[in-house]
View 1 (cartoon, one colour):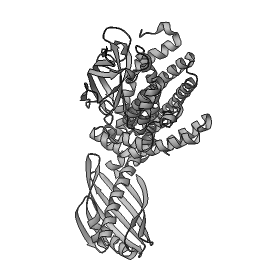
View 2 (view 1 turned 135 degrees about the horizontal axis):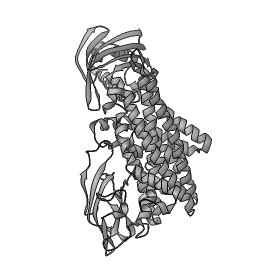
View 3 (view 1 turned 180 degrees about the vertical axis):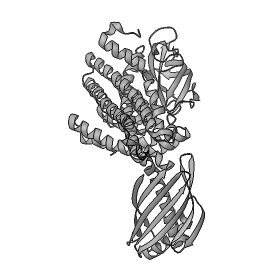
View 4 (view 1 turned 60 degrees about the horizontal axis):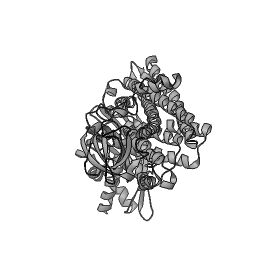
Length: 148
Length: 406
């Protein structure tokens, strides 16, 4: 099952600083919600166990995240691949930072989900994913603003 | 807008005409259904009432869909209300049950039968969501035959005192006001009352959670123990309460039929996605002819029932314009029974087939179709059982002298 999500978030921080933080695996590791055993592998990747909760059912996926600085200081891609609890997922996301009075991050993500989680259907899954993504970006925004 | 709903709106707009304000209302319905998607699912899997439903409808301005604009509502005709409920039905019969009771049975009964003072007192607050209605007709020993109800009233200074039990009452524990029906302790003729649920003697005996489905909808048993009701809270004429009850059910039945359309639409969407992505025996299961048989059934059911429901709604709108025309009322009553009877049966069978297409996962309430299978069953019971609908439809053909339930 394939999903596409996109959105934008404003952060009260200079673009270079935001870019440096969002492409730093140790920083990203600290902002991931419901993550356990997170380990930075090198300057561009990390792995860990992410707990995803849908209603009363929790799934734990072992996820590897790879960051590519495609066009510093504005554009980067993040690819997350993981599997567990009868489901697997691959999320390819890209963000673009634009300068203004604050930094605005425009992002999009394409996800491929298979297994049990896919069974609930794309409409519901998109609803849950939108909620989860909002939670992730709220965490990132707060962490970036706290770090500058 | 959701694709199948958009198709319905476009077709109704092309054939029957929809005004800009009506289209705006349907956009709000679409947004509200999206807002409710996740919470309805989560609460369903937890088997809990979903408290977000009234709030979302309130925020989207949908608590007063059929209430006239002069009382703060959206003033929707039945056809537009049906489309609104069709979209809500995609989220499940839990949302439909809340909306149908509050709007079709509660608000419309006050609008149709209330005095001007009652309309002004209740409807603006109902449209804002400050009043939530329940409908207290069913009793432990009075279901399809409401005339056999036991709840009784006696007159006292300034009003009446009601005593009895109301059973399987949707919105029962969350309502601010209930339309309660009772008969005089020493005589005949049922009367409808507007009862404030905060009144002394009004109690929620139990919330019925041991249901087959419909988990996100509140169902309660209510006891009335010498509850005082003011004289000005009689709805309609004293002794003519069954007319209020039956006219409310006419409204409600079209609404249930509309909700069932939404159920079939969601089943179709879910089945299409599931069967075109799941591979078994080396190909997508949608390529197996026996799966296509299920798809064809759901699509045909939806298409057939859609027009039955719209026709009933249009007839009801015609009757609203000419409420003295009893032939029109009778026709609207017949068509509402046909729409509810066919839509609820086809929704249930569509949901059954959707579960079949989902295979083992369909049997889990984690699947998106199990709730439709469990919930649509009640649509064949409440607001008139299949059997009562059949008797009504048959007597509408054979003549009143053949009414089998008399």
